[in-house]
Length: 328
Ligand code: NAX
Image 1 (cartoon, helix red, strand yellow):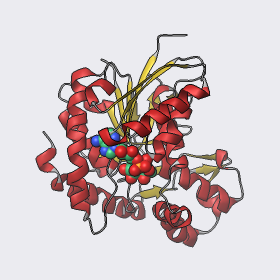
Image 2 (spheres, protein in one colour):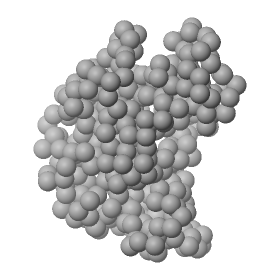
Image 3 (cartoon, helix red, strand yellow):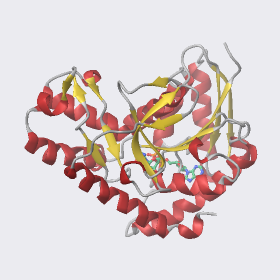
Image 4 (cartoon, protein in one colour):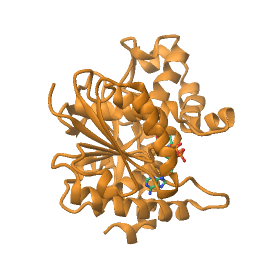
């Protein structure tokens, strides 16, 4: 067993945190042979509730969990961290415009980006979950001076998992047989869950589904609006599935992911596929198991795909414009 991996989690007493912490502590990211320490961050008024979460974690007696620290100070939470999962952010309040949400939450990610640059481990990886996650990630990345941009990723894995489940259901196959779905663009309802390169049980998804009208209509809408449907059904936003997706995303960074079933990660755009440069956008990625990713190159995009992705890319550019004063 190698040295302890230090995992910082922000918003740790929130509903995603509550589902995510046991996944990390039981080896969901670094595997069953790697000890982990949890470094939990919350806002000051929520520290008593976070203490309750800590007590529950102790009561689980996880064999891999060596240490739990709780703090309202980002510099304490990110100290020597190998992985920072930035989940905490403010929910959208009544009557709040997207721009206000971007500005409000954006400020959180300025401070956290700076703290990561100052105190995190030399090989830190950062995964942003808190919404609007792509642009929050951009803000954290810009404010983490000296930390390479490719250390920052944002989560679109929940959308990828949702797309897999929808395709599998339609083709009457198990979701584990669905490979190579791509989520292009923003984690919002403009995202484009592209099935053109996907396979289901080894067959091209389009052929396995055999219903183009469903793919271009109900399928896209269901995946794009799944978050809303969960809120309507549960009265609360996705938490269990979001936690699992955060765990899947982080595990993809630290295990080898090949072209046989790439991971959709939101990463800094280098202009591949016509994506505007410098935004944090969803791409199909492979990973080397050491925290490094590469955008899969050379995939064909038809006019339908280009047009759908372009809508989401434009939204990312608009969001960047709205927070340009926060980009350090
Ligand atoms: P909760 O409101 O249950 O928890 C958020 C927690 O963050 C709260 O306990 C709050 O005190 C804490 N927090 C707020 N500001 C903080 C700060 N500056 N430092 C540390 N902690 C802070 O929300 P939850 O359901 O857990 O969702 C968390 C975030 O994930 C939200 O922004 C949500 O929109 C986002 N999501 C992102 C998804 C994705 O696919 N990228 C999907 C699920 C989820 O909607």
